[in-house]
Image (cartoon, rainbow, N blue to C red; front, top):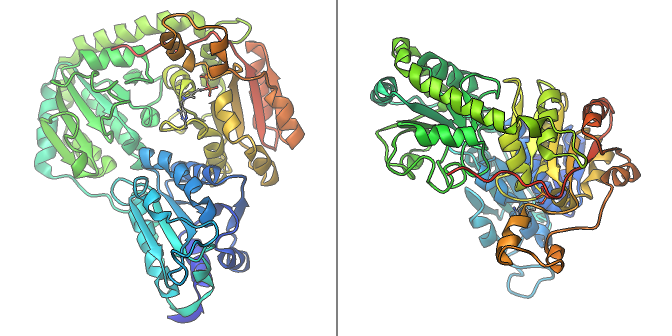
Length: 558
Ligand SMILES: Cc1ncc(C[n+]2csc(CCOP(=O)(O)OP(=O)(O)O)c2C)c(N)n1
């Protein structure tokens, strides 16, 4: 124990947990921010909005598997809470600090004050208040424990005082850090041996099994074990959108992303399977196309770190509770490779379904059309994204195009995707680049997605966050086109276009004005040289790709 301010303890502890960046809009925990400068090398990124701060912390967390920190004063707290929604859905360990109420003045109509704590309840694993400086060390330790343990997720700490002024008070404090909880996963629990045997018996006996791998594979860094088990037993692998980087697209057992934002071959393979092994996926509505792929009656096995997830959506023949890497490792040790032969006919069918899909999209992937087809853009990214890149993708059409049409070429690539919030990807890509400055970061977003947080181009320039952002710029949110066609009974009026189109915009020029590299691409053949220039620019880059407003991503196959 030593006599110190809460701010000194907080700054020292964040440093002790290995935090390198915090993302915030002032004024919050000002004394702590000053102590960070005095005592640590933590970078304090002053950004343009609290939601973007949360998304940056989220991208940082997903890229590094370490908690990302974001902060807001009382009046910005709900903006920050809104930004935790995607982290909550994606199970990213984000820790949010806000300023909050003081018991001495509560209920007296304090300027800018409402009770923000309830708003964090639905988007956090743990939502707590720090009312005394004495509590800063133990509450911060609990925040890290909660964020990274089990299924990771966001945490909120509200510090007393509209700006969290409790950090200015002195107390006898012990700024102890628990290194174990500085990353995901803190522990690697082993599965019960009987559950491993039961699952293997089912997989080995199955004639048409498929693995559906989810974000839990990345959280556990279990890709190598997953692919090795699939190879040993010769089982095809589909992934959720969140688990897209569980296996490379070029792997012979890879069939693509299954579900709603998906690839046709993956849906066909999962629909034809006689046994599905869910690994680190919740088997939620997006991954199963609202529980139709596979059908509810499928025989299923599930592996998850969280026992409460097991069987939530499909009744199970076997359930495995443990860390994915360790559990798949145990399965790999005991798996009988001789059973693989049984699946030769199934693998021939699977290869046929993948070949049918490839034949269907070949022309679009190679299209020279002007305006550019998004399929061609995805194919250019597959070919030219560096092997060690982090690819960050927005939702909506961006998620559909890239989820379905982009292939990871290397097991060293990471693929991070919005769990549903439009506008997430651009700031998340900046956060990912802060976490991994030595790796190329390529963000893919639509123009509607970029507009949300376009001001953060200035943050990227100011902080030299040299991420590359590729904008699928069709002057609209054209994913909405089909929905409005339906709403208008088949054919929209001319005026209906005001519901989903924008004024034309040259984002390259905008980016240049702000100090980033801006490149405008109007012909597909010009994309690869632009990407190369952007990756080597030594400053943030925006590649504005002019694409076809009529191009609609293929709907999911049921
Ligand atoms: C926060 C939020 N609001 C609304 C939506 C609904 N939404 C999904 S995609 C989309 C439009 C996407 O436009 P853009 O990013 O330009 O991509 P495009 O469809 O044009 O390819 C909208 C409004 C959403 N997913 N998230």
